Figure (cartoon, rainbow, N blue to C red):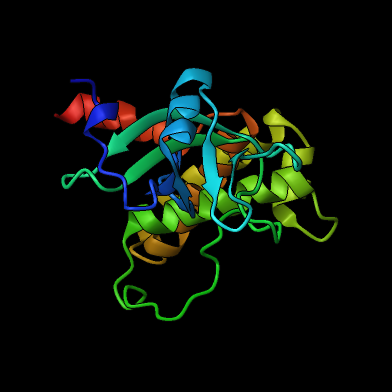
Length: 205
């Protein structure tokens, strides 16, 4: 039996699907798919869903151009939900937001924030600044000055970290500056944070 045959569809022939950015781990959207939509997703490598309101299959990005290239389709342990790990060509939400889940109702981790979550969120913000290049953004201005300048800033911030360590003052603040500028450099050079995480994970397993 193939993996697709293991999907448990509802009485209406649908299965819930969560789309996740394969590079950042961010949850992008929630939708439904029927068997045909799942098969088209696997065959084409682009995310297809089923619209309950229109009663038809739709390919993400067919009108907006914000397609989702599917890296992997995962089935949950009960067989009744799917995860599309995707590389989005643009915002997932019709509002223009990167993710449909942009409205915060409760934030329970800010008192003790996870470094990985903070870095992922910061990396997404830097990527947005690069796409939009707003005039009043320091990040956009820095990226606009090219690789040499961004790399120079990383070097300068690294020196500041060394000085802070030797003096025993502001080490956390200077380290934050260094991480920010390093993320800007990675974005400017087109290197995803997930790629760095993969290298570290492979080295330390």
